[in-house]
View (tube, rainbow, N blue to C red):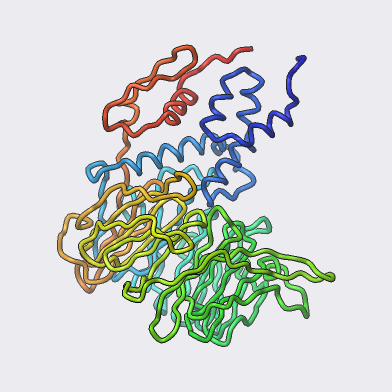
Length: 511
């Protein structure tokens, strides 16, 4: 057709559009529709919005990237607008022992079209459990182990769980069979675990009490590399979202955190020290990679005898000089909290420009330079746990209350929207004996509370299968324009309406 832009040019133009605009241009004609529907465009949108979308290929029969984007966005809107009465509560009770670390085993990516949320929990009974959150039922349990399980990591893309016990036994579980897939007995106590999937396959990194970092294959647990990073224990081990960097540190005041170039640990060269850089901030107690700026890391540290808490944000790059490669860290911003402020224990980041942390009963959102953006006060008592991912922020208090926030973007900085507050998690109002904890995915929230000292309760909170959006949303087409008719409490936006049109209505496109 004369005058038609080449596919490559149109694709390039469409790559700058957001999802709503892409849905609009898909309705222009068949040619534009074909280009706008292409998988790479929607895959890039998913990757820009969600850090866990790191897959380059889809499994046979899996949903398209566009379908995934629309479904994920709908689920987020349900979570953001839900009220306490919109949740279904399922409590897993019984003689479970005291539940410790927990992590999601189910995945969130487009290759894993799962309606169920599955989590793993460690029990003081020296067992590992897997739970169906929506049903509130245990679906698997490991045999009783010889030693207490201390640490847990999961690889949702492969439905694998990794545990380390008190005697240094690393084990790989598929949470279906009784036996482990592999076991490796370490000569040192293991204090940190990080599992991740790269283009070269899955790996597990382990930090030990003697300052060593082991890189292991998955699921075989064969040693790929071993590097002595510190003289003291490795407490923190985090892989960047793009798997390019590994952050390692200990909480000992004499340790300076290090950043390793991941490839050097996955493909070690004999006789060559892995590429790394020490960061000049001792007493590092937390660190977070920015989900959308994969070379940006924010550290929380304590300084001088007064234990002032500070934050610093760094950008990492590699540069080559004289045939050699070096890591460089550029300090973007840094600040100290006021002396009178109660030091936080937890922290998280969103886009790399903001930091969220708790102090007493308050939740603070600040810029990386320390400028206060928001302060929230929804808990009567001290916030004892903070969960942060690229979509959600959860806070739990010693009175067993839970507050749900979601990141939103407005202007330069993303801000937090307060979504809902849940008092006394579960039906029992007896205060918890131990610190309550909560984690979430886009379909559920899981809380761990302990009403008695001998056993914990696992409370699964999931959104009711809501037709509220579609029931209160009416639309009609008027010259190709979607007109919304909604109730006063409607939370669906024009984007949601477009989703309904594109996915449920067969709109003829012009030739």
